[in-house]
Length: 573
Ligand code: DON
Image 1 (cartoon, helix red, strand yellow):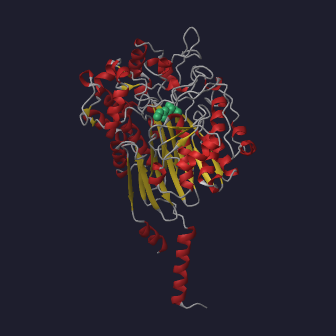
Image 2: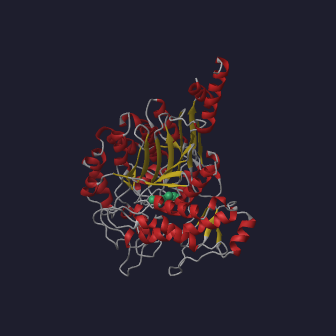
């Protein structure tokens, strides 16, 4: 029989062992979030501190970003909100992707000779698909939030009415899109005071957008998709040469879709499903990396394997993927282990394969970042990873008069003609052709990574490079990196065509470059840093929270947490 003090010691020892080896908290010690703008992060913190959950905070952050980061996302755009509901463990993707208007045809962006006219799908109202973000925010509030929209939209309404300060990245992108914005009198009135660029630090006020958000808070989807707002939107779009009709707005619905979920080597990844290509590409690539034991290889070989896996996955993306409600996609085959094995066997660590050279290589666009991502976890363990977009900087650069709504140019994410690359150099087939009511194929990949002891909430903007950035973020998570390392590490990218590895300064060492070139890879400097990654990491063993915003952007992370020791102590008591 053990004496009392020894028994107590044993007990304490057992608890310590459980704590260090296998104890995993079922709730975080607080909340954490990261977004691309300090004002949007503050909006999320305000709502969480007022008793809102992660879903309420996601509404506040999405709406605030629409006001203070108009280059990236907005109420005239759409996105994917990946949710984890702690109480039930349910994981769902809210698909608020834009939808092509009913008058859209496969040749909409071609001239009479059948040539693609890129400006048509990038600038002005013809480039705009029916927005999904307003409907998505109403849906989040109704189905998942605790607080009324009037409260969760309040920070954004305030920022729109009282103004927000012009920052450096905004100024740079205003300069980049100056001409297109100048052609839209409503956009110019807001963003180009007196017809020129605003002063850094000066305030941009958006009273029409504030009114629109108030209408949404009051009337829900009807405040945007029918009634006075819908009439204004359709009139404004048609007067400027667009093809929207009232029914297009009235018929818009968000869709709840099962995310792409898969387990590799004891790690679960949850990511975006079609109409995003992210999850499908990640699943195929991660399986190839597992079969080739990529994580255990020397650094240069790991990179070789990542690049080759990406080459095939982006080829398949171009060939097969589109709107799941309109095209049949062989997703089971593309993500099967047998197919991953075929790909793995075709990779030769001695030399690079060549992407099919049937299609001439194209150059990737070299403009600034747009689109936006944020990650949130609340004290109950609810999670949101959301990537939102209006596509290129300031979307179509067309603001509908009297609405404050800057419209997206998501129509450019369709394949305007088979084999002809879009703004991101991505090609496609009829699977992603323009068509009435279709949602354009996306690369946005809001993701959760769940290891035995950690949960990571990841994502970034970056067009076609989003998926490779998220992949590298997942690999960093598997390497045990902290949030700052996950968002900071230099990146490299391959997307099948152009057949080249693009890399950020510092992503490849001189020795790695020499080896990869020797194996036949074409390496090209991306010429700049890219991406704007946001990571929240909950270490369930230590019960600590960590969050980081990409140092490439001006975003901010916030963590409010009781100390891990205190929580572990409480659990041990
Ligand atoms: O949905 C997509 O894949 C694109 N519209 C995202 C655009 C984007 O990330 C632009 N950022 N650099």
